[in-house]
Image (cartoon, rainbow, N blue to C red):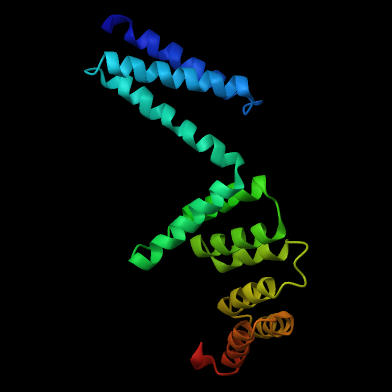
Length: 196
């Protein structure tokens, strides 16, 4: 058996890979992947001293992410879980959050998701990149969060006059008293640079 193992593992991998054709997602493709995973686990059980068998099982585990690529609630839950880790002292992995929002944007291309993606990109990279993304979003002209996010980025880029205009627009659109107080404070802080 050991001398035939590499060929058997290659065939099992090919069965799994066939389930990842461009039309993946159909029941036949999921069935192929499930069969390949079952076979890989069986081989690893029968040959516990063969690390390549366990390596194949580990490689095929990324199948678990397949549904997340097409399920917005799972992606949102993963993002929420990553944010929930931050208060415990862990730094938010903004690169990963931005990547997850990118996946979410592909399956749920709404203006709000696009705004969240832009903010995550800012946190992972730089303000100018996020500002460019926010400026391309259609459909949020009447959303105070879009203008507030733009204002914050403009402020960080030293474009205070534009930031003040965006803060005023955000303040005018905000309905929650706490949001209005926060935005008024930010606007006031632009007039007193030492407070920023």
